[in-house]
Length: 274
Image (cartoon, rainbow, N blue to C red; front, side, top):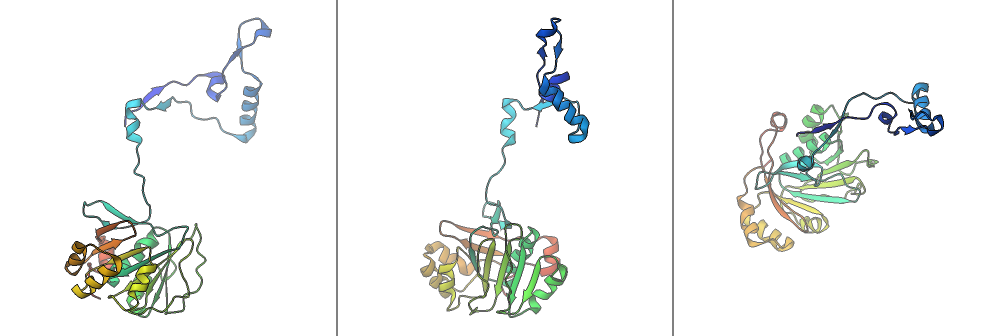
């Protein structure tokens, strides 16, 4: 961006205090006022530092548009949408936030990795700890934001604005009611491998639902429960690995999760089946 430069005033004006004429001296000379003398005294006594002597930088009116910044939800980049734009999932919230993912372990693990990368602590409640062990060791053996617990053994996490928490519940087709639930700065992601009998209840309670490839019968049942358009119901059985239909109260979006090289080395390529 191009900037125009204006020169700063010298003397007292350089400290933000304009010079004034000392009328009592009768000589027309300029002298700093009492505020300027106090400012200099504070600087010399160690309460500040003399700043650099350079021109101020300003923008012309034509360049102001260059200052525009994208404003939107912040959080975890979960992939790209149909237009190739980043899709961001805001997990760290001051209000309870429940997410249900009807899909594969691979996607849940990528979300956990990326949530930890944003500074959140991730607590995994799972009946298959061996599936998470490699990832936990790669992240520092539980010392770098991810911990693994048996089902029903997740302790209180002490979530706060400074230390948000994501609880991942990987507890099979019929996850029991969790001891640790969503709350301020603590989101809960429940992974269901398929559409189970408890899925309708979990879907109704969730603020966000992600659906990967499921059978035509499951798609029809889920479409009725969620009020999905016919086009989405027909598309769900045909989704390729790594693609998820994310649904909220107001929006539906197909997202393709593209792994980084590090994620491929740790988790492999996208897959629906575990």
